[in-house]
Length: 288
Image (cartoon, rainbow, N blue to C red; front, side, top):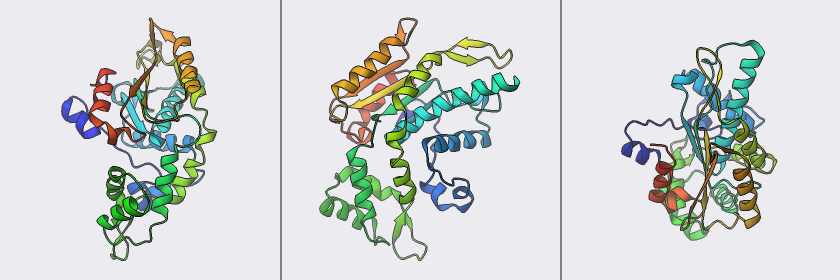
């Protein structure tokens, strides 16, 4: 997704992060030591904030203009937007200090098929399936075959899972680049996250940002963009009505800060099922 968007929009660049329990953050001791429990959404969002500070991607000129996440990542994108707003407000009110040392809230928050409440059933299915595969895994082809033929996982998702492998420490096959215990801990946090409450909070103050010189509040066009998979039955009519109510309650300049899009032919893995449609929606939403 990021590769396609940046290729089509060369003015954009992307920073892809290995979240706690994923990729290099899981396998590199210097990183994993900084991501101790509890494995909550707040902790994960603070990991992102700390990383951006270390990279000096802070302040009004260098902070990321957008954050994009799918499923767990979408929830984390919302959590990050919420926490950066709180951090900026607290910093300004507590000591009047410069806001150039912390990330500013993103102007675009893209949440890709992240449904409030418990995790999507397919996420549990995938984690359960990969957890049941014996380690070390002889080859990427072996993993793909087991997941599709024995575990009933969609071939596209199984193929994607093979990108989450690394050579085992004994050099006899492969193991995962993510920590399954951390993944399960975070999954257990899904039902505790006040997803709709955070959308309301961000909506009430989304238009506030801070001028880097005067620290005066000024209007900005911050927006939350929620992409729903048309084939995901978790998007119930009651849930969509609740989101529409939030959308209608929090309108700025005749345009709601919350924009909702639907990809009719996509299941939960929207970036797999309809990548081109997803890119078109993102570009239509102003990220280009």
